[in-house]
Image (cartoon, rainbow over all chains, first blue to last red; front, side):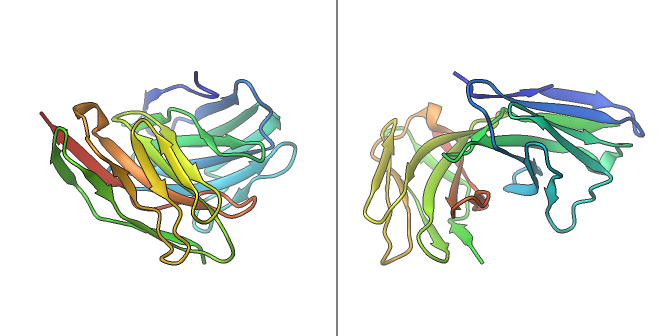
Amino acid sequence: GAVVSQHPSWVICKSGTSVKIECRSLDFQATTMFWYRQFPKQSLMLMATSNEGSKATYEQGVEKDKFLINHASLTLSTLTVTSAHPEDSSFYICSAETGGPQHFGDGTRLSIL
Amino acid sequence: GNSVTQMEGPVTLSEEAFLTINCTYTATGYPSLFWYVQYPGEGLQLLLKATKADDKGSNKGFEATYRKETTSFHLEKGSVQVSDSAVYFCALKRGNTPLVFGKGTRLSVIA
């Protein structure tokens, strides 16, 4: 069964709205969670790495004020896309690990109108 | 830096054909190597992995061997099925750093 649950799976909202995506590790405590973004027919681009209880480390070019990441517990990380615009439309995938392989959520398709 | 290069797609095969998707890597030290599969509209699933040279990862009829001398981790399957149609990503991981992915190869299998 799934070891990482991501919610919601699909979001459609108006421009200017803030959207929160949750990522939960279901049967293990994730010391580290990763957030990726995937454009159509392209590979996964790492956005940020977060460790429980500390600030996320963002990759170059990713706006930390636009993509807020909170990793409040060992089983939950959230990504909030603030004041979303059409160019933020994408497929967002979270991943969690605890020293072993990275496990991935099923992704969230975000469409901003 | 660390990087992964995999063959460009799309790859279109008939059912029961032999599949090879090439993957080579550049990395310092000895990374772990992975193949992930992404079915339409879904996230990534780990298909197989290898953690050291000459290891062979296998799952669901797919296999890949970690070749240090050629820095390769090619994915193979002897007889593909329509249900294998997906995007396949080769990836590497060094220590606690995040996975580094190739660009993905789209496979379409036709009956």
